[in-house]
Image (cartoon, rainbow, N blue to C red):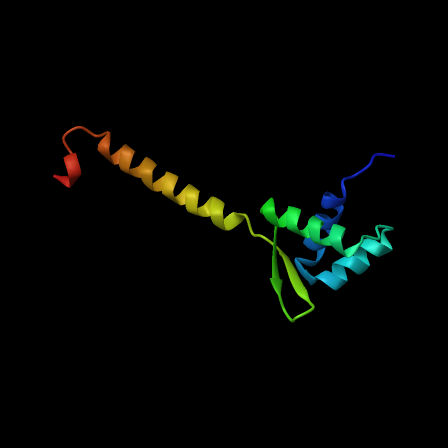
Length: 101
């Protein structure tokens, strides 16, 4: 049996729901046999948040909302900038058409 890091297991549980509360995640992990102290659970969430995989926000005084960070938005912005630059380079590559003259 291979050992899958707890971070991966927790992230998979979050991805399944797209968004859930800390209590719901804790219950899902407990069902899988991973009972964590509050400190270890908070460290797990912090590590995933630092890695840029999840976003944690407070819903109420005692409840946190955990959601998957959408990576697509960042990629789209970079891709659109690259595409725009390539189009400008392509247009500039034609001799005698300097800046639309």
